[in-house]
Length: 235
Image 1 (cartoon, rainbow, N blue to C red):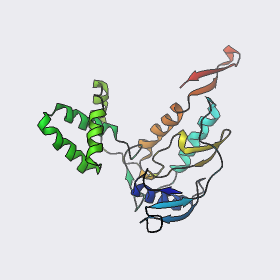
Image 2: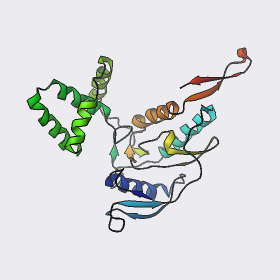
Image 3: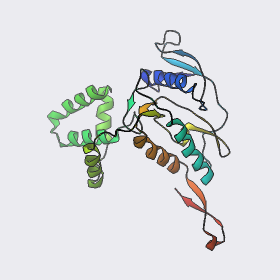
Image 4: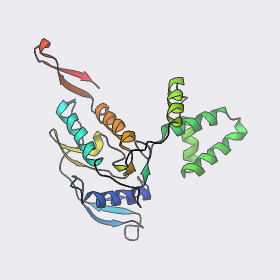
């Protein structure tokens, strides 16, 4: 059972919409048993879902075969065309809930303001994001200044036009912890709270990178010059 609290009510509704949508597309996901989007029965928005077999815990050493299965899982999801719809909105970032570039920009503004102007910055960020004022203040005070290179990258990305590729179904938070495994076989995908319609070019590289670097070490075979021995490299 997933209930609003740790996740937002809107994310509960998105997860329910995603599980209903994937049912017709043959993806291995939990089955939605019931939903209470307004919280009339559970006292908070909630969904009841089946449990899939497998574990989301990554082994200390990850095989290339598992990483290939990661790519296949991402490709299956994003092979499904989808236009934005209620519950499955347009997604323009790899993870809808995280906009670290926006947070850095606002933190830079906050730091550059005199003390008398800081409450106005906090209030404006809260209005933009819907965050409580205290959460906005803590976020702005905790974020460290980005490097010049990171700022340059942010400026370059913001100057680009939105991609015009066909929109597809995206998971929105594809990483090792949201994939279930039986040995090197992916038995299912979970946690669809950030799903929606998005450009595959804006999500696939990030998803693959997160899965690769959240797994610790990767086993790879060297060339025949090294006798085909296996080496372990840290991700």
